[in-house]
Image (cartoon, rainbow, N blue to C red; front, top):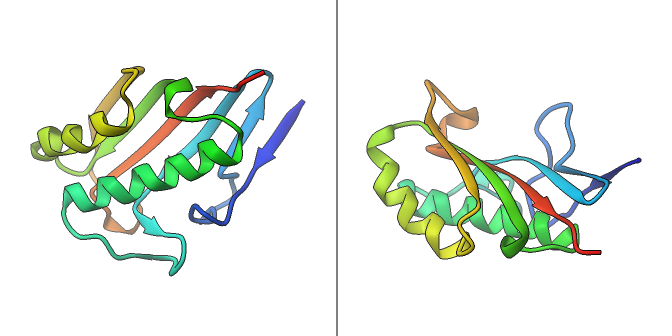
Length: 126
């Protein structure tokens, strides 16, 4: 059985999808971009500031599902420019201290022309 996870502490979906879905003991979160959920706008500039907002959004979804960063088993990270890889990692490693499995790729463009997007799969606490 699938359970939709939603929270006002993360940006609402900007398309026909859910913020996250719980299936069995796993949470599958949609990619988060650096939208400030309070304003609905991208306010952060630069890769570090945008990555921080993304991590806050991811954290809000994890919290809404009853889990946390320590239970993330896989991330997929999208960067608009691979030259931002090191700076992005500097922010990423503050949050994902358990070092989950990860893919990180550069893409041609991201929604709203942001610099990064992160999606996660996490284990739900029983």
